[in-house]
Amino acid sequence: MRIVHLPFYDDNPYQTLLMKAQRELGHEVWDGGGGGNFLGVALREWKADLLHFHWLHPYLLREDAAASMLRASRFLIEIALLKARGSRIAWTIHNLANHDGRHAGIERFFTCAFVKLCDSCFAHSQAAAHAAAERFGIPREKLRVIPHGHYIGAYPNEIGREEARARLSLPAAAKVYLFFGRVEPYKGVFDLIDAFSSLPDDCHLVIAGKVADAGVLPELERKAAGNERIHLHPRRIPDEKLQIFFNAADVVVFPFRRILTSGSLVLAMSFGKAIVAPRIVSLQEIVPDRGVRWFDPKESNSLSEAMAAWESSDLPSAAHENLECARKWDWKNIAWTILAADSD
Image (cartoon, rainbow, N blue to C red; front, side, top):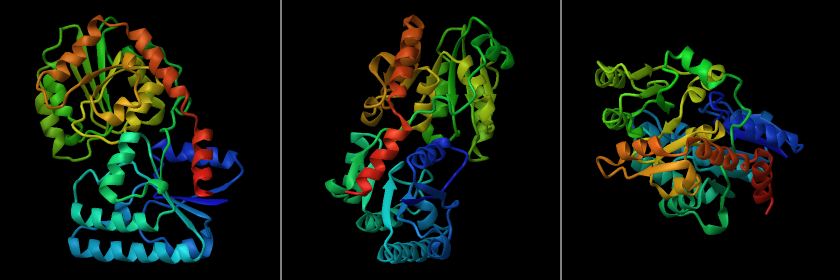
């Protein structure tokens, strides 16, 4: 088969690893670029058997509502034309809506229309599949659940705990909590700082990742100011340096208020780390209970209590449990499942 993934972003290995697995199964795999207009190249060069979409908002939304309506209408016409030329359409549902909340009604309306043109849709948990089916009217026969592939071996991982902590100027004996990933308000990073303030003095918090909105950085710095136990690294962390942050940490914290699927959570499990996460059904399907301490985003003290619960818990056993769970999510099996679904 000739398969094209759209839009393609090389700053996240999810698509790269899936595409590699599909190539190893003998298929020809292309990246479809980062969004925008693609019909011409699709007709002239790709001539794809399968167009596999991952995020729709780059093709649906523009700055104002009128432009979004026009672009989204054009997108649906393009998809209908490509289907008429013999291409099948797949969609992996990473999110129910764009994180910025732009033109939510327009996005939902045209996503529902896009679903009718899809041959197959994929979600990373039963809960995510149910939520997507309800929101977009996806028929059961079109929707399948596949695991989110692991990141074991996707990044360098040779640095030990002692060296990692030395590079980040962290005390060797401290209990280190890590927030890793794009720093955005919906991820609850400000709640995390508040919750951390009640933890014992031997605890340290590292926040590492690109600050998506420039207006967030001053507030982040203000809330961390004066607390020498909070270490900010507000920038995109290069792939080769991920191991420094994860291997320095004891626990990775996901203070999300809402989430559908989290590649960062799978990344933490792939590095063999204990986790703090919100008690959300889609995440409960993924993380084994022995590897996580759950909190309720609606309860004010729940996050700090979940973080403190790791003070007296068996961290090595939790880390091992999460790593072994992640090993099961093999990319080649996932690639085979996707292609088998498309051939049904």
